[in-house]
Image (cartoon, rainbow, N blue to C red):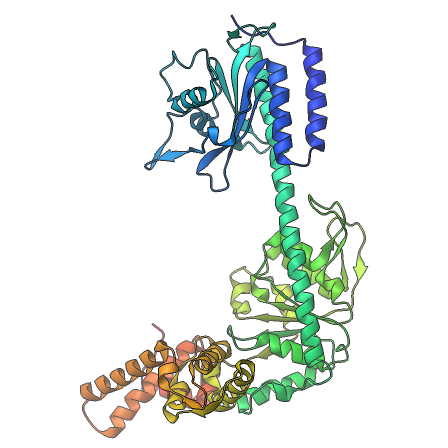
Length: 545
């Protein structure tokens, strides 16, 4: 005998009432209980459960169980794995339903041999329940993705006196209700995730505001270019450019490898300008996904998206009158690049969810370690934004290109860490300085800072920093260089002149590679005329492989 569902009008009324209740529910456990109770009432099922895909998509978690006369313990059901020993767990009816989207209705699980019902047998044994008829329905959201399964147990006759089979009409009702429940569950999960991300952002903003406040107190009123260590010609060129642009409102693009101090340059420009009494706000464009970066930069209105419970100012608005530093601008998504270009041109923003624009007076200093010109050619960066940002470019040299500043930088970092860790360090052994002078520093000033900090921590009081306190890669590079030069000297025959020419050719080729085969930059790095460099390239037959 099959179950006959209620009067259609009554069913519609109950579905409408359930929809309203589910939409108003704000806690997932209570929502799931409400769903199961309602579906049991609609279909006259004695019990029901919901299993949702976990975050890793590796299993189905039993999230809720409902039975009017039985309270199942949470550990009565275990997580159902989607795969066992590398193969799909098709023997489980819930897994099969989740993978295929098929509705499975079985009259008697103890008389049916197509699936493995050992988990239900064990549940019956532990609880005293007697499972007979079963229906498993996929829960499909509004995008067509299966997010879990709804399982109904033991359809009952109208008087609830015996178990009967689930009818086709009951099956259609369960499918529709499962789809409705899936959408509500997914929306709640998205809302919770948005709330979590907003909480993380707010926490990050608070920390950033505190850091900005600390930096402002430390730097404001006393910051000058002399606090940026660098007496060599390369850094003096940078300082000259900064002096020329500091009192203007021109957009500045700071270019340089990772670890060269781009944010420090941006701070120096801000705190020496007429904007120094206003905010200096920094944002790494590579640190947030596109949707969060957009709301972070432009802000949002209450109700703009799930979880936006209050209005929130964006960084452009927070930096009004001051400076916004956009680090790693080359990683900004193309869609946001268009919006940034509009802000730079129109001096106005529109928060997410707002129909009105706001005027902002913000100076933008951007920074990148990428070759934006090449990214423009490859379609990864907007050409119009590139030219708008690079009104006044400042190129920071890599540490290997300003070795003359190395002793001053080492002393600066040593003095700082000696004070920070209250150590009595006498100085560096000559061999340490020699090794540090020969190292290539792929991590630039940031790497040097870490090397010095580690050495100070390892050094005993009233002692010198010795070579044993340096990282292994410094030794490896020097040993490799020594081995290479000895091998070259043994291999080559002839005069001292031929050996010197061979070494000169190697140096030129290495510098060309470092500068992406740009002859002008290479000549500048080697402190020779470009024509001289070209003559040597031709003489030694150096070519890009």
